[in-house]
Length: 530
Image (cartoon, rainbow, N blue to C red; front, side):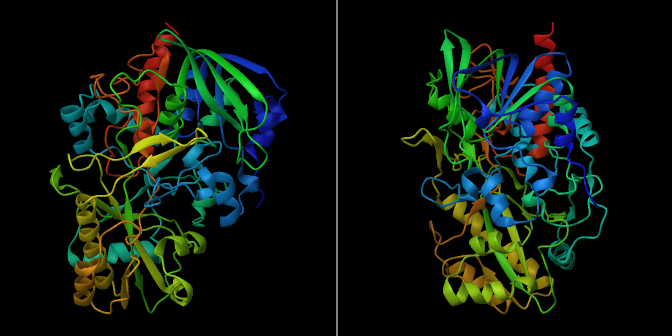
């Protein structure tokens, strides 16, 4: 079945879409609102503001890749659709970071899991971080609006075997499990969501809010890196940008000047604070780039006699919060249990092993379940997250110290995951650790986990959820922006993306961004059109 390319059709109808590599030097673009980034925050903002009649300019560092170019090819997708070719990591390489970079941002490549912000998280933000007006009751209609807009509902198809391990194990143990809501319409259950949806079934920003903004007259410029903001007093007066090269590895193309009455940063955690850092933006209390969170993830690999084929079917459809809120928001770090898809390249890179050991693990891939624990960082004083820093060339990196508080969570998470996997019938379970080995019983697995070393490079860690760095809150001494996303020192600058979060949220963040930014962008729309 041939799927129409909505961008080919839209451009033929008159959509304003510009590839920055085609521009001449010294180009200039003006707008009412400039939005830097086209992911969950940027595209949601663009749709709302453009439909109000404002002249909106969307800028995206990545390229425009559409359904016609999505072939389920891991190597091609990681190179084209992810930050640093899917090789982004913390500054010491202790945590691998999967983060999108293309039109649609991470929403183009995420695994579709869509949860409302937990009530406990919103309450913690109000109590500990002076975030005003974002209680559960006031946010509920914004989450509902996003759910209706993006087809978000619990996945109605039976879970694939990979997810069913989590369900079956929890049922056997009497632990919590539930079905994950997914943002899909007409999903064919292919399973390669992380390489871009060839059917336009995933209701990402690539196929929803970006096209809606273009229909309303917005202008999209892709392959254009925003390098620095220009200031005059408390005003952002312009943005210096530069076109990317054809492989999206360097910004050495045409120079472009952008200006607007109001500027919205929506490059996501790491990138939004990095742009402000490159620009020497006002930061009188040293909060910029601080408290950046990752939901650090560790892995447990279980081998079965039956085929699992975790590379097929909806990648995430079952979760467990059995260990998420047992101690409230503080105390030992809680974690959410899910499974990832087991696509060969990404799985080989994350479960570890070398030489024959790696070869033997991958030979059993079709018979293996992989489980992950999303560790909820940022709620306790012992969890301060990371700090965005700049390399000599101005590119960002994240310094994220690892401490005993996080390692204790990783240890408890391994014990929980291993117990679930054995309860579901696993014949052997391996903690993804430099010195991990297959255990044939849970008793042996537990002994192994207790005896493992807990230190950087030994424990395999990854993240697909970057949050914080431009924290919101009413106290300028603690936060970069206020509870409406407005910069505390710059009057015409808003931050509308996941970098707003003052902690991690304890669940996959895309719906939290849609709901929060939907509300804040609507408030901004009303102000700008008054």
